[in-house]
Length: 161
Image 1 (cartoon, rainbow, N blue to C red):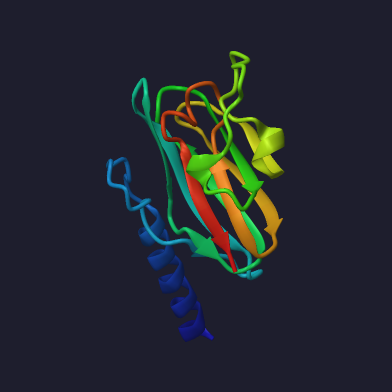
Image 2 (cartoon, one colour):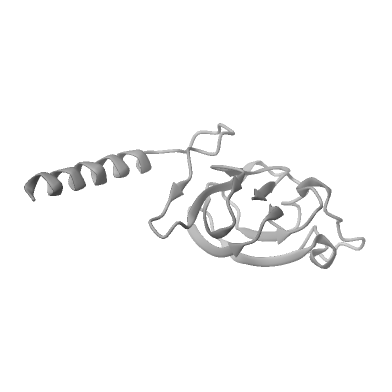
């Protein structure tokens, strides 16, 4: 029994060590591997932020998962507020139609984009928010639709198999 408790404690310490640390680098690798929960749900780490006024990013820990429950853990590394939309679409993330008449708040025509599955409406600077959705097989676009953010590069393709 004592040996099992030590094994569990050591495993927990390894998990904490793997998840800890400062990952504020500007590498485009997304900051590490996805974490898989005991309920067979999958967790995708998402980093969003900006390198400049017109240079924004969205980095994923991985770009595809198996169908089922997926939790996106979105961390805002930037100074501006962002949002996070999950859109089921056949259109590549960088080719979603823009609004023909800008409304002063959004870049993308969400009605033309595809099926908006769910969203985190606000992720303030320095915050981390979670969104859990059940995804069917197909292509998804992940994006921030605040004015100038999508056009600045805050988007990613995501595949569910």
